[in-house]
Image (cartoon, rainbow, N blue to C red):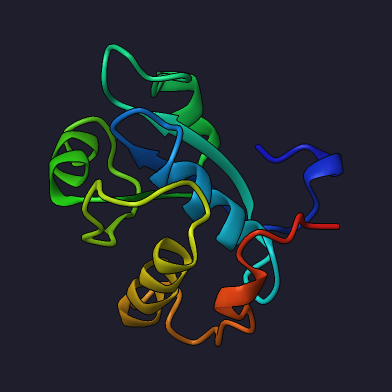
Length: 129
């Protein structure tokens, strides 16, 4: 059940291996216009900053994974919608290339394709308000 303070925003759990670069950037993109999702970034690896937990899976309305390895692991853990962006682990946090790859992948994802991104690659380092 959503808390009143969370509003009507979609709760999206963003997953990569460490929860630091890709998933944190995916969460940042999805938390901004035009998506405006309530997001959390987590990792699956033993070295992850914040690891996936049953509580976080329960919290999420849906899950977005950076690559197929995470997608396959998460689909074994939950029946909730799980989306794969197919983004390799080769980018820096919030790099313009990573933001562009995420926006392109989200446009191809049925769950997000109806939303048109407005962020420009030059805005990738901008801090959300």
